[in-house]
Length: 393
Image 1 (cartoon, rainbow, N blue to C red):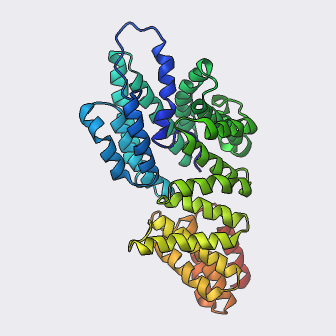
Image 2 (cartoon, rainbow, N blue to C red; image 1 turned 45 degrees about the vertical axis):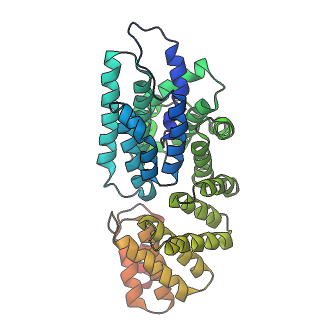
């Protein structure tokens, strides 16, 4: 699950207001002129960020290239490299093959920032360093490295707390504080594994966190998309409030039509809200969109869309059609890492096994159900497959 804040280039801009606070502090050495506070840079960066969210990374690089040519040693470029890798990770979060490159890029951004800070007060270096720790915290939580994740999150959030003391009404600041408030409370309530580290977390308040995120979604200068994403994500996956999740996710897919990850979240929300007609319509539109471009969607998107369409068709009693989609999901998942341990691959195998069992094709059903039962995942489908095998075979 995506837990901590700072999840896109826009988070660089979240910390820009922090720079104003830093500029007020006394210093014994001259401050480096800020690139990230340059109004022209901000205008270009906002366009580049929109390109990144729309998964057009090359366009973002083209926009930023003149700035990179003029400021080749700036730490923001190491972070920008990490962002490109992040959008390879996020759509297929179960695949760990990009993790090392991601952490290496963040470490490089931290290193460059630290060297600049050792020479003089440098606002941009502080911004990038904070951003890099925040990104690291988020992904470490995805991988279950709770102690390291909380440690890095505390480092990043220390800067946001300073901003709150100086400028408490800024919408950008409310984003970071909202994430911290919500997930500090949620982790304490739902993840016993982190209790040994609970002393490192603020007490948190889920309601206050959601309120702050709504303020950010309405009033942020740069973080409206991030706040919108997290509200949709939280309502869909944690609060189980599928109706509210729809509003936020529909806005994201409207603004970023090429971002298949947002399409997947919206389709899940339709499905969980029992609006399967809307889910089917968006699945078909999304798959047809890539067919019209004569290019396949990314494999994780393809795997999930065919799985969801197959599941809906199965529920509608259209098992012949359902099997076609489920087999596409299964075969797609076979080619992806981690082999045989992907949740959607397990789901597809389970549904296929059930269809063949209902048709009386017991040998084929047993083959697919054993695929599920052999998984080491702590996953309800695994237990169900084991029970079904014991009962039927």
